[in-house]
Length: 560
Image (cartoon, rainbow, N blue to C red; front, side):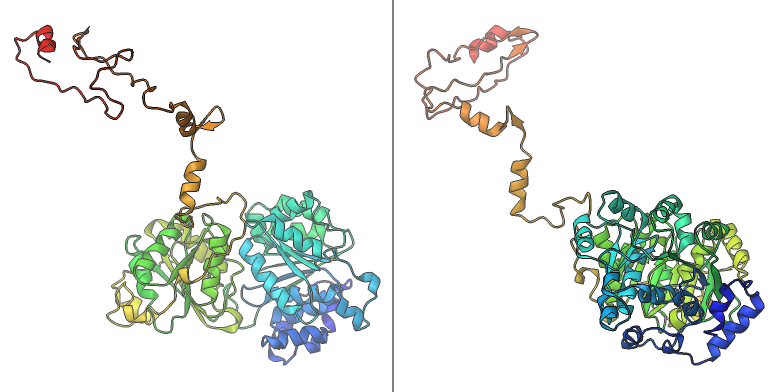
């Protein structure tokens, strides 16, 4: 197989679906290792260090073609190893000092400019791909930099100045740094577009085209995604040279989702959904769980409700700062929280071991979103459970998804938190309620994971949550209003006389009745202060006396 894959690219017509299936079947039944596929010994050593020795079908089919420098369109189900499918060839194509020492390259080929570029649609996917590439290139010491928004520019610019071999980034930040002349793409030999369909959905196509125009014309281009709409194929035809389209699926896995994911679709009432979710999270054998919502407000609300019910839950959605999003993901990876409530920003790129349950709290927008959400579990051959709660209003949307994916759940069963079939299908112990028992609250929680100061653009220097008592007087003094360049308080102090004898009495309001002023008999003047008005005594307020209706204003003033 390793010999036949490059031959298909050299002027031969693409294989038919039937011949591709035979090739995939042979790859699955074989005992091929990464060494057999011709990768460098250092790369194989790095993979073995993390327990990766046998390639997945997409990797076994892609590596021979990609290692020879040909353009590739890779398509496989989510969770089947696409990242290493392009990551290994990309790392192998980069020239580093270890290659010069081994005699595989000349010193003139070394450069501090990026030699490979990976464009991804989301920040979370950028981090995931960066970590995978660092793992693959660890032995050869390949320098990989993550360039994405939500972080300060300075650390990323500093990393580029020191020199990098591979850049993984989101389109917006990449173009920003190119425009500032902090990033040069003239030495890029390999371009990878990961999750290209998502970039199209998010409106990144114009930015991606600008990035491609900045690259050298002579390069290798690889495009990978779980779904390949027509626009992606059109993009490939414009910017790729005779690409080999590789679609890897197992012969016994004909569905759109991975076969080892058990799917459950329930028709649930919106007011009962939090209770249903709380009981599903107490199912037997439940490990890490991800709860997907369609809106940011719903994600924040459900995370708060689950926390009040005793679950260690974190949230990831667009209204959070990048520091808070990364805090929740780190806490989830470190098992400090075991429930991650998120929007579709986390539907791609989250590859965490131990995710056993995915719950669609709200029906996804389309079938592609459903596939990527469900694909967070059942990864790398593990088993998983996916539960979708369909509201009554979302039945038409779900039926469209069901038809597009050819699923047998066109009419979901009406389900409540007390339904017997819910307990039976998901293995929920009898008597479970929607509050986690105190004895089972063993996770450290989200607060145990510190928030990293990322220097986020536009972030406030002092927030109420992080301010201290010592900081408040400083900020209060800084916020004082000024007059003529000085604080008002200082101007008042300067205006006060040195001694009390020279102080003029404050202006007193004159009392009136029916428009006429009321004379006062004992009103002291500034020119002739009375003996009673000593410097140490302030004038006593005038007491108002009650009068009868028959009394006139003059009589009243005389009595006073």
